[in-house]
Image 1 (cartoon, rainbow over the protein chains, first blue to last red):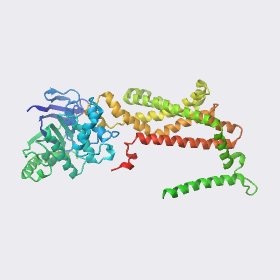
Image 2 (cartoon, rainbow over the protein chains, first blue to last red):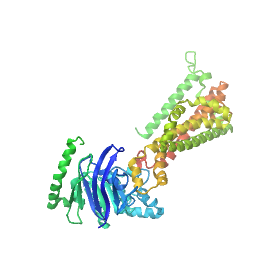
Image 3 (spheres, rainbow over the protein chains, first blue to last red):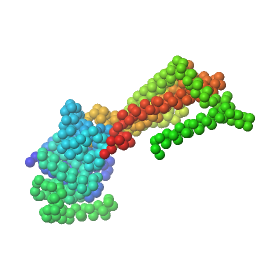
Image 4 (cartoon, each protein chain N blue to C red):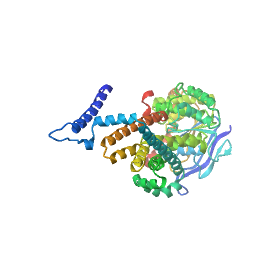
Length: 263
Length: 263
């Protein structure tokens, strides 16, 4: 299968040459329609890697290729779901979702029709007229999800999208994401600090070392049957075996980050 | 406290105030008037003067002149503040160069500019408009500058990932952000436009509420001064109520205005 995202031994440095080297020699491929999670200790540069794939950051060394083409500027094939609130607070949920089509030149009526359709798909039917501050954290994430998906990107980049939510809401959102993803498979690069979440959702879990000069040190295929239920799969004995194996590797990095004073 | 009770107490304050004024100015206590009529007039005289003023045509002319000056000062000052505020916020170099001069100009008490504006623009409405503009401009300028500077970087990155170009970013992100800051200072800036107009009229003019008060003062007509003050206060309340309505309409997306349709 073709590679949707290919990070080719990239280095990312903050603050010019001689600055802080967050990521060093990181390589990672995501195939079309593949769900890959990046797990690593706090501050290891997971989000940095994602921003490089989005084109929001330019690597100091190495290159990013999207469907075989070297990325230059923003990645237009990708949708990005941020950890923090990224909705425009002055637009209603419907307008926030529709805007991705409107800037593309789709007529407003049509964009609104599709936005309402997406509102229903993320379980927010009838919430179109609400402003972000009138929605709960989970509802805002749903709007964010719809806002990203309405543009039909072939690559989804997600930066701990469910991080701020409570445990139950996270699992519900995980299932929603799997459900939407299974209808039309897109390449997903999903950053999380939660190993269980990563295993429950992904085809592959990659482990990042603790920073600075973080890199990818482990790559674990997840052969759990699909379609999966993000909640029930956690009870599967195979899930436990995977969790045990990956955690052994991750724990070493977490302890290193801890001793390095990052945590 | 219930609404009716609150209103009762509020009316009581006015009644007590008027009663003290009335007794002090028209009842002899121990051979003296505590509030001599010459300096304090009496509530009934002021009341009948206001009635008399409003039965003549002249008051409407004064009101309309002051209103015109206020509106012009607000529009020109706000327009300039928005334009320059945007320019400075998007061009840090320009801001750095002009910064000390902006601070200097803003530190200057604006009343001292009134004589120079009269010399330049004459005794008509424009010297008053100019005075109001110097007051409104800085409030709007600082707010718009702040608004553009403080657009959340996450909202901005998200908007770019949604495919917005510079023009669309301006329209959907920077502009609403700046406007929301401007409207949050709307009461202050409209108030200052009015202060500019009235102070300007007071210092030299042939029409307007400020002129009316000044004229009465010139012939020791305390009743006229108080009548003018009461009319001015009522005028400000009306203007403020209109501003509040506009604000509620434009800033529905703000959390403060949420109360009514909260989930």
